Length: 562
Image (tube, rainbow, N blue to C red; front, top):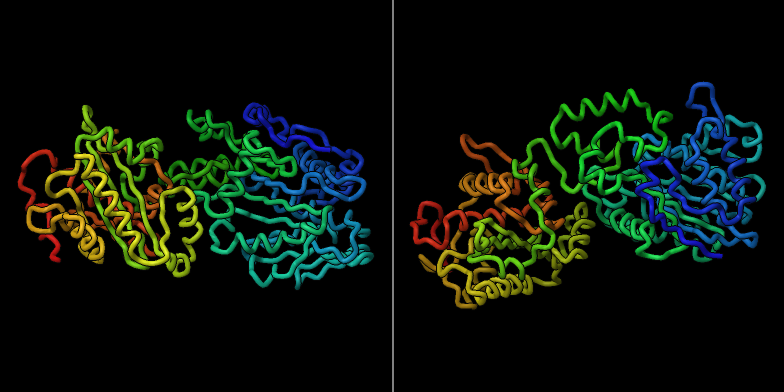
């Protein structure tokens, strides 16, 4: 028995407060039994200690019935994977507790293992607490289930099955053969370098336990989605939209329709119910109104964080208080259809910036062209990284792997292919006839010798008045930084709209130095900004109007020596 788990009209349904599950339970008796159990759990942390059935809204019952109503009488689950994304404070921890406690009670396999996997110890404690309180509030449950707080462990006294809540740790999940797994706050796992292997280990038991399921529960991330979270959310959207047909995967995603995001309606608190199915229950409207007002009065970065956590709006660009001014206009200036090929076709002249290249750095390349007819600046960029960066910078490894999948980052095994790729791209621009006859390649003079050597072998000159020039860094980039941000804000700068550039921009931190500003790696920490710095190197040259014969000596350092 199979049925589509897609929800093709979800945009209409979610605004109308209708169910996002478009089909009834395949096995209604099993679904009804599960809801009878879950609905009878008592909520100790709510005034009056009501039962879940009396305190919840219909969407929770529909979710529980979808999970448990998919098990056949023979003990095989026809839907065994779920992604549930909902805004903060919509009783997600309570849902985790109720569903997994129900699974422990309804489980028929002797010595079965059930697992709630949390990204941190604190979140694990938050997930365990409602389980223990639900049991202790019911004498029958206390007689059936043994509670061991120290181990965050619940044991079924009749069949020996266990429910354990663990914090993310390779050793904690190693060797587990869990029949039922609840992964809490999936977006936090997206930041961990080895999360994919950890989740594979945690859910591996399902291959020999056909009655099992895994539920991925999460809020939206306050940073652009990354790693396993990005992958799983992207897959879930494709299933929901009918692009991918996977009848064993059920996505339940509370997010705004694209039209509401584009119109700005998603930022209106009157529409907050769309991503908050528990609006007016566990989500207190007065408190949300207060938080919304406070966030709006702060800077854009704080408001974006509110939108991500409380309205489930995906963040494309993180904004810090000391951000580069151009970051506020960056997303609006993007054109994902802009490729290197289209830039070469549309531009009368193009210059190149190159930055980074150490083993711990990215090697960033930026091409800026001046568009025929309009004079607008068009930007395209790419980056390279040595594989050792994935080990030395584990905190950013998931994002780097995402950029590789996007086609914006090339990971090389040994130094050499990266600089040859850079030189190949520059040769393409020269062959297209739009690279200036001199001063067309701007580089950061530090640590860029391999690139210069490779370019020299391709007949690019490093002599005075030649092709390659060193661009002054630090506060001397002030002019390029200011020019670029003004052009972006004014709609005169169009970039390629790639995630790696948005990430680089969001990593940039500004430092005031007397009457000038600088953006440098020291201020920005371990997060990489090389693609953005390459852009500023190119902007320094394009600002000089390369079609003219003006004197540029005031803008540049001495050319790099061989």
